Image (tube, rainbow, N blue to C red; front, side, top):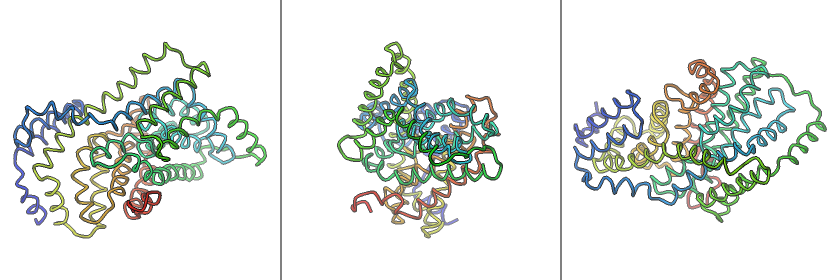
Length: 442
């Protein structure tokens, strides 16, 4: 076939296929992803000679020696402190007050609080765990089937990597050399679009199956409740306010915004007397564990990506893809399918570091804006958080409730479909991801 002939022009041999086989086998054996990537990277570097193994150690440390990456543990720690201080409960109170006038109000509040938490922690799994503990039992009491309640939380928590500040945008910005602040700004509309799509899907599902009643409230009663709730919990919104204002005004880098958010959250915890010095060791250990999963993946993925680039794999992929079709629509759909499939079987971080340098030349080839490409990629990968077999958010809520992952996944299908619609809109309507950017990026 023509695409095979195009790919063969790159002259890939066992120096490519054997490392890929090693990676697949190690993942199938449930070996940690960072170890599988590391083994594949070392094998590829050794067999191809793309980089002397004597420089591997230096390459690993150079890859993670980036100021931008400091923001990752800071946002993770902010989310952890937020939960321990009880400020996350204030978000739920406000979200519930905003939606209590509608039928299915608590389901809508659950989605909103997922978005609020995402605007601070930048992590899907952390959001699913934090929001799940607060809402799943109440969702079941409100009339939702337990698997559906789990699916709703898992879907809402997908906004963790889609609404800025997001760890995923920090990583893809590092890999492709794009400012994280620019990506954060570009992600605002797409992130809100995903949140609204999940919210609307839940409202529609609730209308069809009448999971939850409610909504019997006059405007005056609703306004009074909202005012009381905001008065008692307004200070919780200082944290996301500082992050958004600092980053989008240009006064703070993402790293500085993360550090400021941590300090403000800790101060609020002491003022409210919900945080003690004895809480710090467990908080730091918890955040370090999450960060300890991310950084080794980045460290080993970068030399692997370098080896792939030296071997000409991105160029070969572009030649193979354009050999199938030169129609931009077909190529965009092909990229989306690859990203969604990759998100189903592998975590976001290795997908970004490995696939971004391979797919971006194809996006450039069809004239796609690099910012639009990044937003499309992260959003498509975000679908993988609620799709088996990996579906990280599915595992998190399943662990919280004991529900079968398969049952949760079935109820998550409508949310997967609504997210895919937004992915397609982002891919084919550049304005969604570039409207808020300076003219130079449009």
